Image (cartoon, rainbow, N blue to C red; front, side):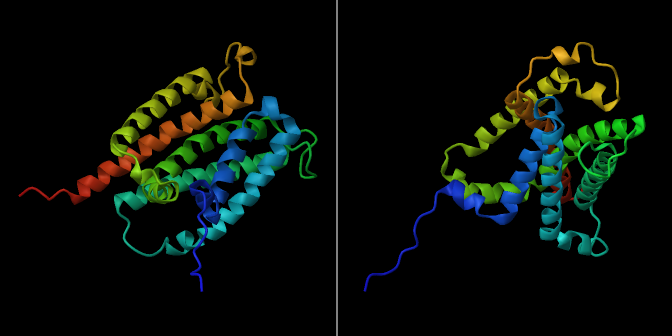
Length: 238
């Protein structure tokens, strides 16, 4: 009898078959695309927002142990950073969804004349979510990266550590550039942006640019977390 051998699966497909990774990737893509209201228009924006909302519910179900573990265990600096980042993310998400239901043009929850404050909260909280998602990804990157390396076979690449450092520098530089290009600070503070509508943009450049902005904050959170972890391991001086 011939011995059964398990068919080989493409590394990318192996990663995609992981339910959690698929949901997280779907959330990331839908969020980045729905941000570009100018190109996806109102219907696309609200449809993708609902997709993101349902994926968030699935993500929460997958990670429900996190909520149950909050009262237990020791609260070291690593855990405090993660909690604060997740709290910022959950708070901004709640503000976006609550204001979104109020100003919706499609859902029956939308008010005919929504107050200006609801539009402002929706606008600011959406960009806070960009930063908070970056923090969230950065603080969980040490657990995400090994799964990616195993699934994609990255561990076989020579000088991988050096390549990671170069990639972080490029992502950080790109994040800083696009933060100024899209006037992120002005958007967060609701300041007027001169010639905002004349900024040349496509869906690809907008999505890629905001991914780099998110990567900037992810890199910052990752290295702050790494600093505190190394400080904890360092023997105390006598």
